[in-house]
Image (cartoon, rainbow, N blue to C red; front, side, top):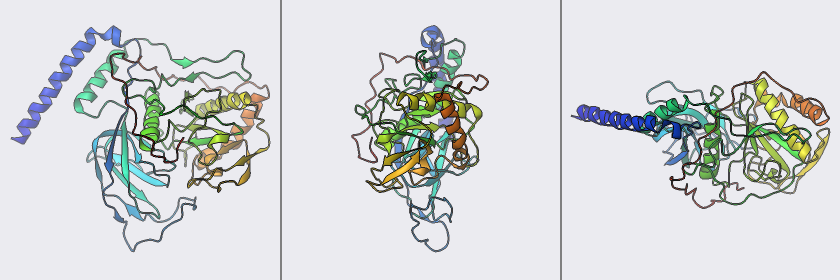
Length: 423
């Protein structure tokens, strides 16, 4: 009986999808002048009870131990998510947490460590598992779906619309370079192009941005799987924004800019690319720095040459716009915080392009990217000093988002600010 019912429901889904696809083909030219980008969908689940991961209960391990080693002390059971998801993490959790995911009953992904309020991008999964080293897991799992696959029908419709869209040529929605700027501002994918301005499932800021100063740049990685495609990259940015805003209760996405493995630069936090917008990327030092993140995980795998060039070109333009001399060091004053390496009021001397671990209790941006920072600093200095920006062979840029549907309801946004590592 149940099997027969399941078959009937599946046939009903397929029939509904076929009707929708037929309508989409009729309206194809109107729908497909630009690439379809599904909006983000957030959902949550209370983390089930966890038990010690074998053996006697381990002593609490201090967050200040930054080497990331030690025995796994707590592991969650396998968690069946309420819907299919693309990104996941513990809402508002700043301590290091390891996650893995899979399709129901399939092969597990590798364990991926994240911290500082960042999610992990899996690119589609149904089940999740978490573990920690030195502290007991608790809280709420926050999921984001940015692929339009929270239901079987949704997945079919998304696939159909993407197939239709692929038949149309679209122009890239980029923030164009400034010819008069020295160094020239590189081409940057605007917030509208990665989905922040979608009326349904977008990622509008909660409040107006705050402004500070830019005395240095902090380089991050997003602990995203490194095998994503150019078409997936804009949705990854949208998913990170949803998690930062709705899961962590921040005002907006934490980074000022992001760079994918193909070298494409994405505008991050709203408020003006040239302006000193305060982000939420390096607790204690947000008001004096700009933050740029490589979309990937670089614990062992270095960034691609294209990503390095994107970071260099963005930082050269951004730091020159704020008259930052990259050579030598600058003095930063910590505002404190549980994830900051220094207490409030401590003055520290830092290089002007640093990794997140230099000011935060984290392994970010990963050992492999940390080793590239000296080269990045040299290249940024060269560009600011009048040298030619570094280049790599051209790569396929991400396709732009579809224009907002004026008939769609406005995204209501996230709950009121919970005060967790705000800004």
